[in-house]
Image (cartoon, rainbow, N blue to C red):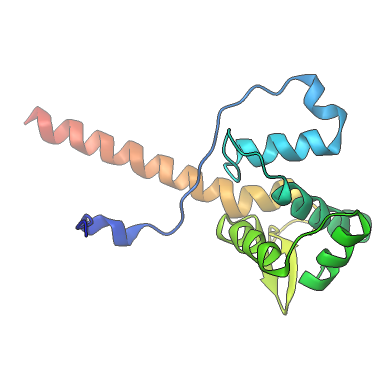
Length: 157
């Protein structure tokens, strides 16, 4: 077993963000936008061939923005079945957990919803993303810059 570094216990969340082009063709379909987002936000890898996460995201978007409801896993499963998508309950819960771990989705009273900003409308997904994800990433970048400055100062002595 490999010994981990002492600072490893300080990790609260891990993000993978990809710098990607956003050509106009991506905006032509919801599915393409879902794929682009999932890849840019690190939910999937570049070699990903499975599409279940897109179906789960599609179901969440449908319930939150079309039906304006916070779905249960059973609601999400019913939507997936209505679209002819076969997703086991275990796999659905796995993807929902991954979305929760990423800070994009939260679970309240057995219902799933996109994280929202306390000062914005619940339907403002961009503000929720900024509040739950971007602020944490920006704080990490600031901390990294601070540490780099301290390292440079330490090595100048």
